Length: 288
Image: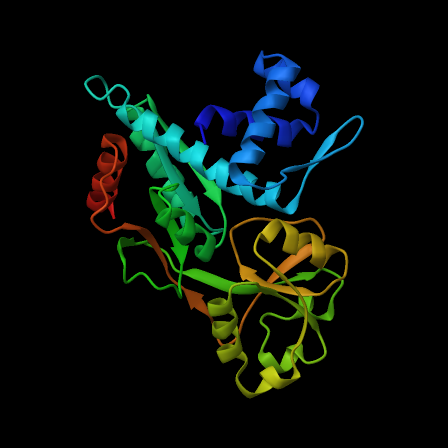
């Protein structure tokens, strides 16, 4: 299974049209069709449902798409790590980040680093801690900005300087918006939107205590923008971090008792990094 053929496959999967994909790849349509058939024969599966005007992925095709994207990304990342090694510091540093105030701190450090090393690029992947850890294990990410609680026994890490504060995001016309703070008892009968990570759910369950038996969970989320959209459209009130952001028609209300969460910037133990990633880690160690 050649890398070139995987790139061909990904182009067809994206365009859903072999003729258009062949034109973008600068090869003939029969050549591309032959490569795809040979790939299916090599793997022993059908990758596409072929229609008259377009193609769509089968279940096996969708699995290969995910794997091919990881393989191509890891290959390109490896190539970049070996480029310009004897010249000015360059390359790409891939960081997975959750939605957290500490991303503001990290962004400022990225700016300072690029002022000294302008050829370095940062690739930011937004996801929750579980997804970020999985991509770190696969070598697709150098670093992960992870929200606690999270198991970091296999990682080295730097504890970030600011605690994240949980608050309740509600519509301005909600009775809860008029409160200075909300308690578990205030939320009885209120549909709630909760974070999807199981470890985070446990933290919120502990905050509710005995009142959790009366909690009504309407939805879950992993990106605050989507949670805010659901709140705005009446799905419920969302438990989330207050990120110094404002949403029209919505208001953050503090929790009582106060609920805080720490954050860590982590990387795999004993991993060999590119020069750029190594230098950035050392810079952060000295600054935090």
